[in-house]
Structures are given as C-alpha cells and as structure tokens.
Image (cartoon, rainbow, N blue to C red; front, side, top):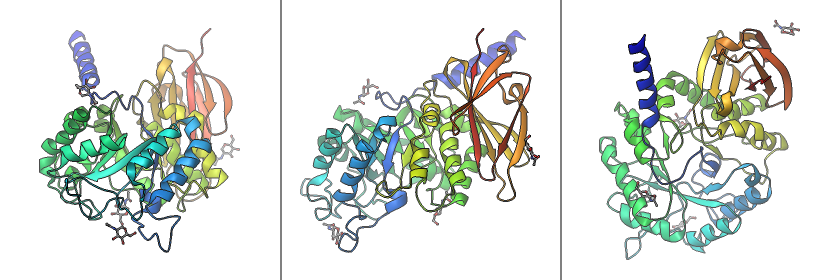
Length: 409
Ligand SMILES: *[C@@H]1O[C@H](CO)[C@@H](O)[C@H](O)[C@H]1NC(C)=O
Ligand SMILES: *[C@@H]1O[C@H](CO)[C@@H](O)[C@H](O)[C@H]1NC(C)=O
Ligand SMILES: *[C@@H]1O[C@H](CO)[C@@H](O)[C@H](O)[C@H]1NC(C)=O
Ligand SMILES: *[C@@H]1O[C@H](CO)[C@@H](O)[C@H](O)[C@H]1NC(C)=O
C-alpha cells in the first residue's frame, strides 16, 4: 500500500515538475486570430485587395478584435502566417515584408496592434524555406529573432517545412535561445512534434515543453467537420501523452478554430469550441470577422466556455467514458470544480440521451453534491448527488457542456 502510494505520488509530481519554457508567457493558452485557415496564401492584392495577405487585412482584423467584443473576452494576439515576406533578405541578411502588400512594414503594424491594446504575431520556418517558399530561418536564427524583437513582435509561429526533422531536437531550441537573447518576451509556438511524427520519430515532449510555449502535433486543420473530427480523434487516441505534456507555460495545439467559416453547422461550431476548451487549447480564430454571422460570433464570445479554456489549474481534460456514439470528457478546474463535455459522434439520426453518474465521470466522492450549469444555455441545472444520475440529450455531431461546482453546506 505504502509503496503504491509513494509510486503514485512520485509519478504525479514527475509529471508536474516537467519544466516549462521560462519566458513568463502562456500561463493559460493563447487567444487570438491567425489568417491562415481562412485567407491562406492569397497574395493577389490587385484583384482581391480586401482579402489578400497585406496590411489592410490585418488592420481590419485588429480593428474588429479591439472593438467588436473579442478583446474584452480575452482574444489578444493577431498573427500573420506564411506569405508576408519578400523573397529576398536585405543587404544585412534581414527579413523584410513584401513592400507592395505591407507598404508601412511590420513595425508599424505592431505599433498599430499595440495602440489598440493587442499583440502582433509573426510566422517563420525552421528550415531553408517556408512552406510557401519564402526564406526560412536556417542559419539566420539570431538575426531573425532580433529583427522580430526590433519590430515589436510578441509571438512567433515557427513552422518546419523544408527541414530535417531529426535535427529539430537541437534546432528548435536554438531559436528558443535566440529569442531569449533579444530580451523581449516573445511567445514561441513550435511545429516540432508534427514534423517528427510524420517521419515516425517519437517526440520528446519534456524537451519540447522546456523550449516552446505551444506545439502542433497534428495536421493543419481545414474548414470541415471531417477535419475537426480527425483532430479530436487524434487527441483522444494520444490523450495520455498529451495530458502529461500540457500545463501553465506550454500547451498542445490542435490548430485554429474554423468557427464562422463555411464548413461547420451550428452544433459542430459549438462542439469545436467546447472540445478545444476541454483540451486547454489555444483559441485562435481564423474567420473573417468583418462578415461573421451573429451565431458564430456568439459562440466565439461565450465567456463561460472561454473560462474553462483559461482555467488557472491548467490541466488538459480527459475522455473518461466512451459509450456507443457518446464520449464524455472531463477537465478538473480550480476549487474542486469540473468541466464536462458530452460529445455525440453520430453523424445521423436524432439526439441521443445519455445517463451517467457524476462518480463515474471521476468527480471526487468526498463531495456529496455538485451544482451543475449548462454553458451554452447559460442556465443552472440544479444540485446533483455524486452517486446520483445526470441525464442529458445531445444532438448528432453536437455537445452538451456543463460545469460542476462542489455545494458547500
Ligand atoms: C531568458 O531565460 C531566462 C532563464 O530561463 C529567464 O529568466 C528570462 O526571463 C528569459 N528572458 C526572456 C526575454 O525570455
Ligand atoms: C510582393 O507580392 C506581390 C504579389 O502581391 C508580388 O508580385 C511581388 O513580386 C512581391 N514582391 C517581392 C519583393 O517579393
Ligand atoms: C487538411 O487538408 C490537407 C490537404 O488536403 C490534408 O493534408 C490534411 O490532412 C487536412 N487536415 C485535416 C486535419 O483534416
Ligand atoms: C430522451 O429523454 C427525453 C426526456 O426524458 C424523452 O422525452 C425522450 O423520449 C428520450 N429519447 C430517447 C431517444 O430515448
């Protein structure tokens, strides 16, 4: 018994003490906007001036995020993805933005974001070239980190195209050090495990966590339910490894939210928001905030779901029950609370009824009663005994999301 207890405690603390990157950032998962899923590498500013990767698009999004209610609920980073650069470095080997599309340069864009109380993120690649063929950072990490710091950049997404994945255990930490040397805290988002997994290298999540604030481990998300579901399935299958890796300072990245784009139904949009929050994932929108529907916007601005994502305990949730089409996920929160998602994977038919006891979801049994609240209906559901049953009805490809708080007498 004692030996078992000591072993269990040791295992628990080992998981807990894996050090995170020490740059003071990412105490909770980042929230913001990235152009890639919605706008891709559209550089045709002649024919599509409002949607091409250029200054106007980012200024428009900064304006929307600052004044459309997004900043108020926590969205803060506005991130450039691939295709912002000129194809050539300058005479000092520094990167430059495409001067036709960014006539005032990146520094002025960062200043603009900062003037609105937001932060600006940028994209580069660990290899010879970015995925879209622009200059990569290989052999230029110190110069590039310093350039970003000089521009006032707050966040770097560091891709892994056109590089050798078996050199990443050395190479990604080189950029960690280069960023640190600038003295500017810059959020560091890595794609290191994604590229290693692609060539069957087992990612060393301890090392990744010591060097990155965020890490992508699965394919780029697309604007469809199939794509969102494939990400959820990956996170389900790999949950033991991913839960152990995540915590304040560094998080798993299932990629952008596609809520407000073209591919997801209303139920599916709520499902992505709920699952990403249970995963303690970044909430990085990639929709056109100038034309987004009220319905999608309401989901993205759901403060109660966002509070789960941003919970200070920083524990990623776990799938605790899988019964037919229904998966039940549970994430422990501060103060002995829990967030629970009932997820219906069925792609046809009508709503499914689910009956569970709170005990079997894994709630602490020493608490007799929990107060349940529905986070999409914004409604208290009453008090439930830990051994009693809870019944709910879940739409196909949809979710019901609740929080449970101990009832104190
Ligand atoms: C650089 O690293 C040191 C040691 O980990 C840390 O204390 C410091 O805050 C870091 N600075 C930046 C700008 O990230
Ligand atoms: C800037 O982007 C335009 C497309 O919008 C392209 O035609 C031009 O060659 C680019 N300039 C540089 C210096 O890369
Ligand atoms: C998105 O589409 C790309 C290109 O077809 C594909 O390689 C990738 O696996 C897709 N990602 C997901 C998560 O479905
Ligand atoms: C689900 O539960 C509701 C309310 O108890 C009931 O009216 C409905 O018939 C049930 N549906 C199924 C499919 O069992």
